[in-house]
Length: 211
Length: 270
Image (cartoon, rainbow over all chains, first blue to last red; front, side):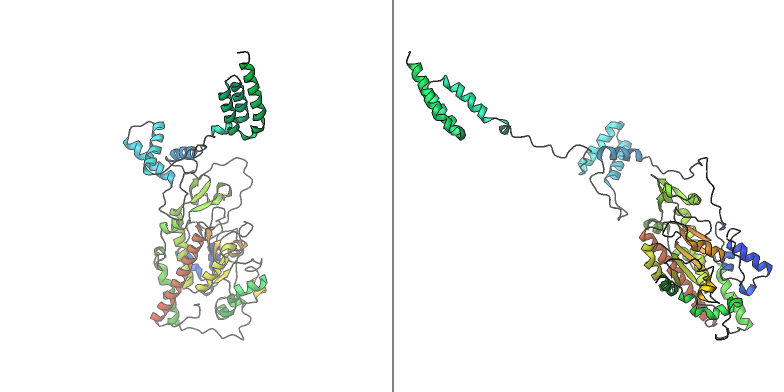
């Protein structure tokens, strides 16, 4: 069957139509789809479009960007709270994310109460907290760290040295008791306790002698 | 191995069609001596035949393809999702609804009538006994497309497209080959993101095409383009299901009408 291989000129239909009109293709050899195309032509004739040569001037973007009024609220939500507590599950078509709930509550409060913008944001957070959604601010850890036990900060050797100096001025029994106390508190200094004991005894006898 | 797959995929193009080839492509059939001669139908039979073929053309939606899907079905199958703004093809701009944070969104209000037209055309071609070839070089859905073609009794080509498949068919497959009457593209790009060669070849061989064009495709040479998403499995399964159902519906209708009119199976039907 005769054909026309010029895909850049006209459409498939126009070429076959012209071949039939010229008598090259007989009526009985008409392609099957010819009548169907004639009855239901496409919205745009499938003409070949030459690829555009280098565009030096930036043409305008004909495709509009899609933005909604609620996007301002959403942007603020994501900036403050990060991704939100609930994971987004796209497999369900009726799924409502935590951000969407926030937006709905915000709009509700805006229409009913007479709050200002900043207050409105805080109000919606509180309202959601009341409903059970815990929103955590970005950057702040969830639980405050436990304060370190102050006992661990004390230096016991220094404390012992201080006690001994305080005890040398005091009387025997108290000195002995203090020595025993210090000995019981700090076992590592037990070896040093005995010379100290003799030292304090001699000091005491010296003190008692002149009196 | 690729050549073997190729011939297996398009083997049907040659084998059962010689009788029809003798009728339709008369100039190419050198081998008519061994084949059964085409039965000459009597004149009133041809008049009936013509009526049978032309009656469906007067109805706007004879096969009720618009009932097969709704806009909500398309939305649920994620048909409206396009690629990013940087990948956009200039000629796809009229079919886009907008871009949300740089991701293109296809206008489903336009997709619905385009898809209806495409399905309607497919149904009429199948009704008239046309050969339909499914082409898709998207490897993720290759098996799905082949399965769809098998289930509706048509053909599929989801492997490497050799240059002269359509344009050099008489030499590659022998004389008297009947070429497809409609090619359906479930993805118009090949594996290197260039336009599939078959689109240009089909236009050269005067074969109409139906194609699912995504936001990075060129819709200019496709006869019935359908601006839709071709990357999501849900969307691809939807298209395969729709095409399969329309083709089966059209063929069943044909058998039914022939039985009613008492014509018996005609030589041009599949």
